[in-house]
Amino acid sequence: MKTKRTFYLALIVVGVVIASLGEKYMQEEYALSIGFAMMMLGLYKTTQLWSNDKLEDKEKEDN
Image 1 (spheres, rainbow, N blue to C red):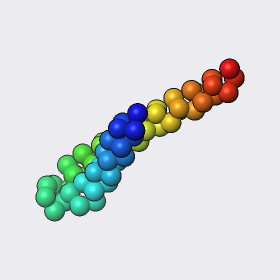
Image 2: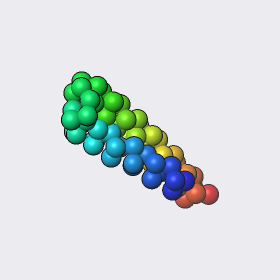
Image 3: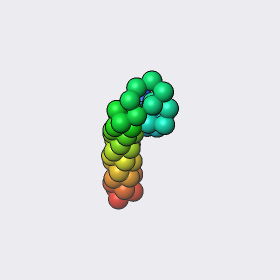
Image 4: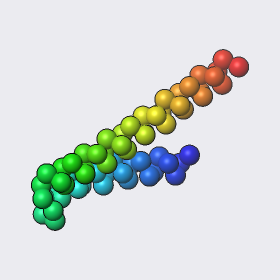
């Protein structure tokens, strides 16, 4: 489970770096698009993990 969190955090960070510094290495529109897509994918997957963890914690408390 920790590996997924680390991977998604890295995906968010890399997405931000590409979006902000990518215009030096590729066209600005592509850098922004790729960086934004990577960042949003990382955020989406991270929030899914958080919601699953909260549901599991709530089920443990109920039992």
